Image (cartoon, rainbow, N blue to C red; front, side, top):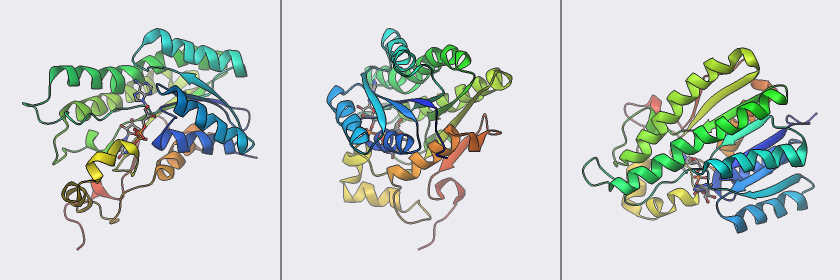
Length: 258
Ligand SMILES: NC(=O)c1ccc[n+]([C@@H]2O[C@H](COP(=O)([O-])OP(=O)(O)OC[C@H]3O[C@@H](n4cnc5c(N)ncnc54)[C@H](O)[C@@H]3O)[C@@H](O)[C@H]2O)c1
């Protein structure tokens, strides 16, 4: 039996990168998937891929920072597929002008918080009642390794937002542990996706990141999608309130091998 047979999953930011790979993987594991993204065309093409591979999926256009749109996203899952069991809160932004404490513009701080932190809260807020109605569920929120340690290349709003995701997820997990909803975070290291394309296209900045990764390479989107699949599935039935670190060893290292 596939690991998500009979489950309905909503994945935000599923038009690109980690979310897109996760949408295909969850569908291949039997889930009916709501592919949610602010980029309508990307969500639609992700659905086309899933359907062509024999899976079941539908596209929803959503800005995760907008309460009514997020509520409509969850309603679409319930209306289309009859319930909700998995929410992968994956959408996130990493603007170029998110820098140090002194130089990050307040508007950038605000937008990052709206999408990366409030967006996750709104997703949980909309999903919890639907999951309770569906007999329980699993929420997987994407944080980052920078929620656990300071980054040498400052990105203060992003880091603060991801720290908030970790703390919020723990509290959500405790609140709903006896009501059949598990909630966990994933802390990815640097992954080769469009989010990091700009940073990784600069050889100096690329090398500055690479030197801190014991495994000696950047991660791949499927390596995060597989962690999300584990947390989403019943394989993780006793796992809640955890932060699963998938970072090539970054947070374990004081120095890395030559
Ligand atoms: N790539 C990395 O190195 C890395 C590392 C740690 C954490 N993460 C986190 O992983 C998650 C996915 O990142 P990715 O690397 O796949 O990035 P990506 O840029 O490839 O994909 C992000 C997706 O989110 C969507 N999105 C952005 N704003 C949105 C909004 N307001 N509403 C709905 N959708 C929105 C984008 O359209 C895009 O499809 C993010 O939360 C990111 O912070 C990424």
